[in-house]
Amino acid sequence: MGKVLTDDQLLLVTLLIQVGVMAALASILIRSERFGRILFQPRRTLRERWHVALLLGALLGFGVFVRILLNYNAADLSLTGTLMAGLVAGPITGSIVGLMVGLPAALLGGELLAVPMGLLYGLVGGGIHRACPSKEEIWHFSPVPVLNAYQFIKTWIQQRKVIDWRTVIFGVCIGLEALRLVLSRRFGSRLLFSFDPHSNIALLCMFVSAISCLGVPLRVWGSARTERMLKEQESLVLRARFEALRSQINPHFLFNTLNSIASSIRSDPDRAREIIVKLSRILRRLLNSDQDFVPLREELEFIDAYLDIEVIRFGRDKLRIHKAVDEDSLDVLVPAMMLQPLVENAVRHGIAPKLDGGRITLRATRRSDGTRVEVEDDGVGIPGERAGEAMSRGIGIRNVNERLQVAFGPEARLHIDSRPGVGTRVWADIPESVAFRPEERERDGHHNRHRRRRAAGQG
Image (cartoon, rainbow, N blue to C red; front, side, top):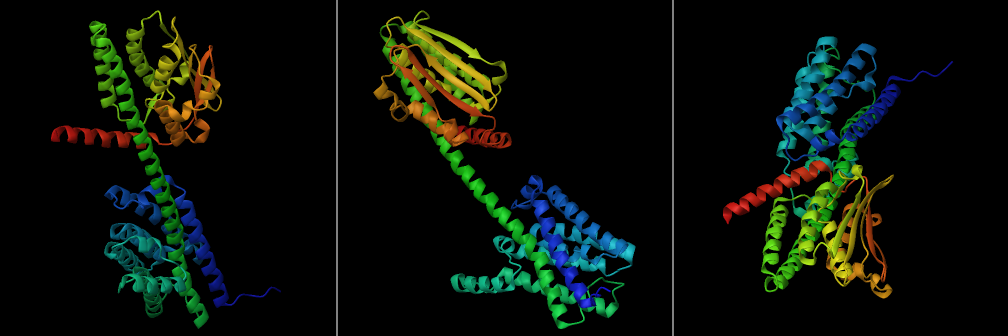
């Protein structure tokens, strides 16, 4: 005959299950991109608070249903979960969750004290959320009391702070659980559910379980928050570098085009005038564009406008353009101003030195792993000893190569194949996904447009 567990032993098993359930619940919730984004925002709209409250309230309220209807006490994480909701999302969210877990207990189980206790837990947690000047202390709350004591001593020595909010949270959690136990024993478990330990060890384990059920999800979410912040900082660094590289290419392009105009003013004023008109249209387009990435279709349209200038300079007989672009590659996102330095390099160093001119071919080929974009010319080519230096010495090509690697990684770097007397081919493989999400580009584009309008107003 199997050995029957005592009440305290059964209580310990139940408490362990509760901690495991809370840890699993926290891990599942943080996998939701939307939940994580709302949870980690420094400020939330009323609608976002409702979303968090309804989600947490529904899950914790379901645990109350399971406890009352199936008599499975380990499923009830309602009050500790309500305190947690208030801590991470504020008093409004905490109060809503408190009502959502208290009403089922009152209506189904007759536990009339569940509603005021739920509100108390939510408001106390929300009050700490409001009062705590640094939310980092909430996210770094540890379920291990020794660590909290260590953090308190460390903070007090370093900053001479009288209040350590992690210690406050620890004390509040213990105090609320003690109040819950006292009220349950005073008025009976029919009015307020609470575990009833029969030994000091079981009582201690009950308090440790409450701290763990609060601290484990905060620790899980705090680690996820730190990881998200590091990724955002890395993305900001990449974006700043990318924008710096993009801003570098515009003066380079303008400088070379102005040199072309200067060389044509005396010999052919009409041609210089036509180049200036074309250049003004290109500059207007550059000023109106604030995107890091553009569809290949738009990049090719920009190249058409640029090549119009070069054709005016060299003549249609000397500079011939050919395109071989797959239709399904036109919507692929590429770095803005990616092709112009490559085409300019082909014109100046490949076609211009040839007496009879030559042809530039633009290709875009859809592949299984992405899109290959190529610029090829049948010009004079690059000698073998100089081909290896082209990537590091030329401003335009070096700039494009760095932007490709910042956006897509080392595998997207430029490749150069050149043979003297035959021509040069430059290509890059664009992967399917880009480094910056579309919603980020839209948000940054709106920010940049607002910044330009403000600067124009000040000017």
